[in-house]
Image (tube, rainbow, N blue to C red; front, top):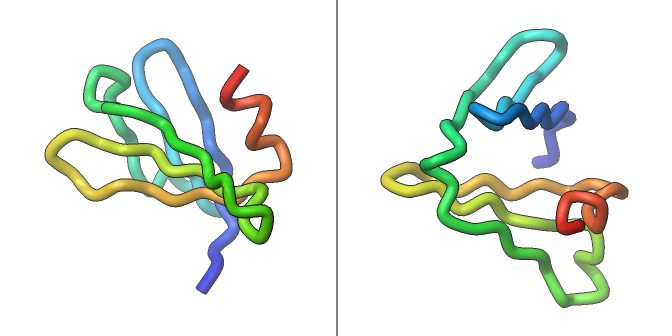
Length: 68
């Protein structure tokens, strides 16, 4: 099930916001990696890999901007 979220990145944390309410905050130092899908069917997907926590899968039309 897809859920609409806003991704907010600062120099300290990555925030997951839903309907103007913060759902999760991830300290930048806890982000291990970002990966993007190479499957054409998932051309807007990327994953935020988080140390000692569960990873986050996002879909965004601006995905390629995240990787610049």
